Length: 247
Image 1 (cartoon, rainbow, N blue to C red):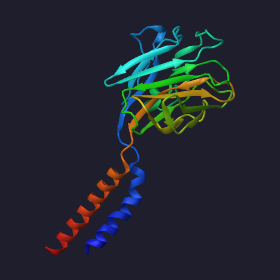
Image 2 (image 1 turned 60 degrees about the vertical axis):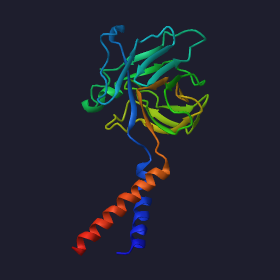
Image 3 (image 1 turned 90 degrees about the horizontal axis):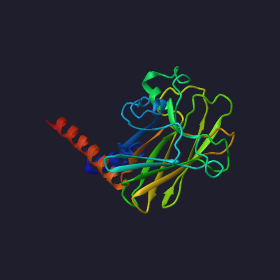
Image 4 (image 1 turned 90 degrees about the vertical axis):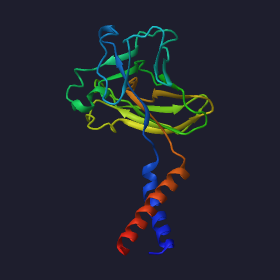
């Protein structure tokens, strides 16, 4: 087999494989949950492979912060009628979520919430501090409410402030039940001019409030790096096979 044929094969396989290499392994995954009975010693379940971040059903300060290694995660809840935070914070819907597969139930049964029943852009702001400025990241976000059996509610996730990139939407409703960790999720690609990614979530219709069950942060590899790695692997395999045939 000629070297030119090897190169052609490598390029062909790269074209097929490259879209599947868009995202690297997760850098951080966080499952938002509630302190049951507002007791920090009794958090709701945490999804396997995720870090847990919990708070009370009512967060009077309208914000929550947790540190996970190099990253600081902050949630800011938009106020209702200027100063009422009695309907924002964290919730656990264990009873309503009981029919969800146990392997994924922990992620979907609890969430950070803003129960404002408004479609005026109010919601929740998620900030992730500790990223590399101007580097591309993907963020997978979940929005599901096991108790929402009345109005299917779209939730829009958009970059704000120093963060730019794509937006995504999830329509949360009690049914159909989630069956995999891809259900009721959207993945957006963003970057920031400083070390903090900031995403705002808000329901856009049906007055269902805003739910954020959790997120997963991943780095996006440089396209050239992924392509060269793929070419190298393909060419090495082809040369190895060619050598085996000659011996």
